[in-house]
Image (cartoon, rainbow, N blue to C red; front, side, top):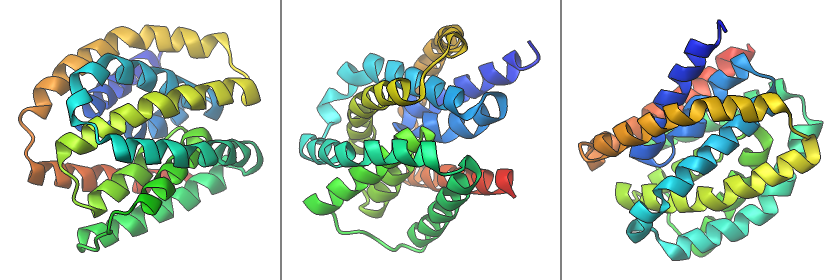
Length: 238
């Protein structure tokens, strides 16, 4: 019971960010859920709730989806998903999170100093592949896609629409792989069910927030989230 309040706050804030930006839920929720649950439980709760958000929002954001990029992300993720599952089962979680944290921080610093990436079909697939690895590995598909889109100066509407559509596929696939390869538990599904009303509140507030975020503020928020994620993962393990 002592963990119910922080659990509710984590889900509420993460849901608002996911709805308003298209990438905030796993980036915000996963590090904190790992403090309350075992890795398998934290990852699967994140996958279930993120999948629900994507299902609810997909019709509203369909006009903003870049379907070409979405297809290439999806193709790339098909190669990354099984690799991420192997990584999850083989590599100690501590070392996995340290490596990912250092990579996120280095790439974010490059973005802040205006190092930009030329978007190509091959790079789309590579970004999707890394997102697949991150999803089954630690339940966080967002950082590779966010770093890639930020480096190509993608409009916030396209970023949100395309990532949410991509998540609809990758979260469903990752959840199936996780359940099949690592198993699941009653606590995971009960905790997810408890969180659903909070997700609903976050969806409503996030839609309101999205209307007030301009492109410049959106980019700043992106950098803050990336620095927070990388820094938190690193400090948590040191």
